[in-house]
Length: 282
Image: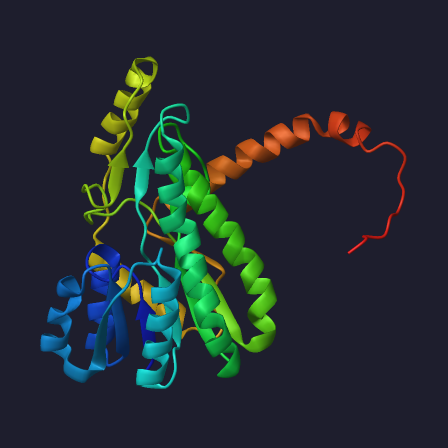
C-alpha cells in the first residue's frame, strides 16, 4: 500500500478528526481543514510535517479555491478528497425559515460542490484520485422533523452518483459514505440546529427526539478500518454503509417504494399514451 495524501474538510471533530488522525497514524499525509485553525493546529504538534492544518469555511468559494490549490502544491498531489463538513437542521417543513434552509444547503451541498469543483481539475491533471462524500443513512430514506437534512443528503447523493459517471474516464473514483447513528458530537449545537417550533408539530417532534434518545449509537473509532479498506480497494463501491443500520433501512425503504410503484404500474403505464421517439434538442 502506497502512501496517500488526504484532503479532509470538517477535521476539527467527529469523524473528520478521527479519520485524519488514523490516516496519519498509518503513515499517510493529511491536509486537515476546519473553520477555526486553532481547532486543528495541535495535529501538527503530534504529526509534524505529515499534516497541513488549514482554516477553511466551505461556504467561502474564494477561500476554498485558495486552500485546495495550496494543499495540492504543498504535497504535490491529492489522492483522497473527503467532504465531511456538514450539520443537521431539525425542523418540520412548515417551521424553518428560508435563511435556515439555505444555510443548511450552503454547508451540506454547495460547500462540498465548491470543494469538488476546485479539486477536480487537479485530479484530472494527475489522472486519478478518490472522492469521498460523507452522506448518511438519511440519504436513503426520509423521516419527519429532519426533512431539510434529508433533502440536503438526497441532493448530495445524486450529485455524487452523476459525478461518478462523469469522471470514471479520468481514473477518478467516487464513494458515498452513509453512516448510521454514531456517538460523535453530531447532536451538539455546532452540528444540530433546531428551528423555532410550531405547536401543531410538538407531538411529532417529541416522538422523533424520544426515538433518537433510545438509539444505539456506534463507536466512531471503529469506522477507520472500514474506511481504509474502501480507499485501498482497486474497485471501491459508489455507496458504502458505515455501521449496521443502513442496509436494513434501505431494504425496508426500497421494498415499500417498489410495492407502491408496482401497485400503481397499470395506471402509470396508461399515462404513456402512444409511444413515439423524439430527439433531444440540446
